[in-house]
Image 1 (cartoon, helix red, strand yellow):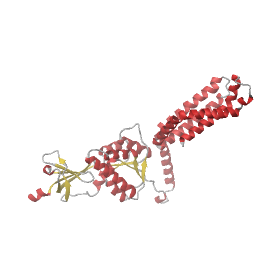
Image 2 (tube, helix red, strand yellow; image 1 turned 135 degrees about the horizontal axis):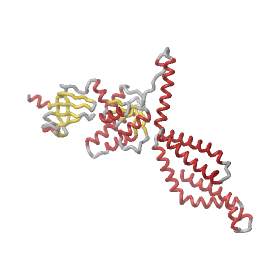
Image 3 (cartoon, helix red, strand yellow; image 1 turned 30 degrees about the vertical axis):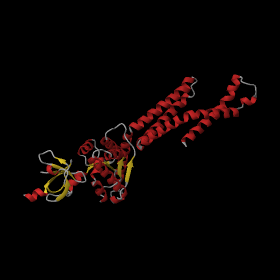
Image 4 (cartoon, rainbow, N blue to C red; image 1 turned 90 degrees about the horizontal axis):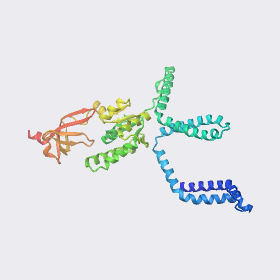
Length: 369
């Protein structure tokens, strides 16, 4: 369809050029004295045919260029595009106002060349200012909105607070909290209000983990995709996919912080380092591990679990196992059980903001004692 539009554009352009200029060219060259040759209608048909043939040589390149521009615009976040367009419009309006008095100048360079130059420069500068300083404009709008809300609240203290419900902020999930899996249970209990935002670059990282050659990483990635499907299809929560990307930023964590600032959202994670960076940059963050600290742990000392010892630990004779959510279990005297499923007895649980660690010992060893 786009290719047909390009051909049509060339035909219309060729017909217009032929209608306007071919008769003059024929008369100028004194090609013939027949009046019908200098007819503008014949020139229109001739110009349309010539540019139609040329369009077959250039159409593929033009269509490729337009699709490249289209893909670039789709990847740009809506906020960036909106403020960049506003800046462009403002720059063109200023250029138009400046060019009005220049049209009356008799010097051709001043009346024709300078207005074109000013239009291009001011349009470009307006787009750059709107695009690069969009966050300041958003913050300015938010400040004005908060001041108006505060004045309205102060003037209506006698009204019930239910008349002015606060809009819940978007919750942005990072890769670690999706793989963890507990976010689905939290969403099911309605502890998180507002829309759940899944950035496209987080989905890409999750898919990369699911395609890993390492068995543990691959299982964790697939578990994360299953959790997302459960949240989107089974739970009554509003899930939004953020299609934008920040190509100038390579780290996924930095992209999350940038997105949270842009949409005034809250990052949901269980990554201790990301939590600290968010706090430092003034971005609100919800840490699932901090929530786990405030509620009863999943396992308690004295409980029994069936686990598979996967590898040896740092200390002598230790074995390492994992729960389904990735929680590490340190099995004392468990090195000899590597590759086997055994029943263990929980001895202690260590819970910090960095995560949960469970210490256990084989039940067979307990019976032997």
